Image (cartoon, rainbow, N blue to C red; front, side):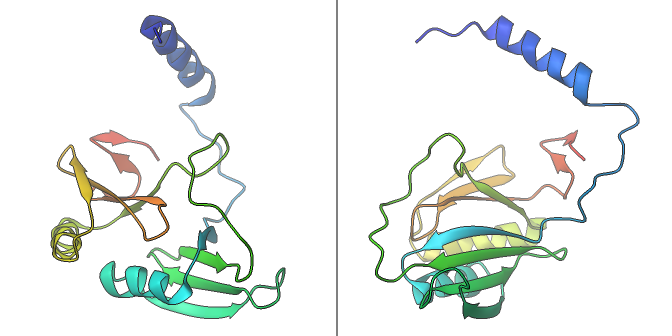
Length: 162
């Protein structure tokens, strides 16, 4: 498939010109309360995020929308949560990347934590890919793609994004 990269860049420039304002208005949002992903095994997910990635489990409650399902939360810093549902008894398929779906979740960590977690991922045999010396991409036990990013919040690869 051939792409017209010049046209794509021109469209990106037009969107940037139109919507990235020099005096950005304040957001109507207070922050990300939580992003919710799916888990096929609550304990395995808790071990992965709580023990391996060092994101403390903050609560586990019953999912109000599906009796017997857990809704559980991990502290990912800065007042933000990463949450999961499990749906026992439902035959959910494996993770897929689809339009409107999850591509990846990027979580900022400081450089020393990035190095420590990279070592833990390697020791645990979790396949991963390092990009630009600041990003580690890997998948959780259910196939959701994650990124640990050593850049500060609001920055990405030397660009200010917030």
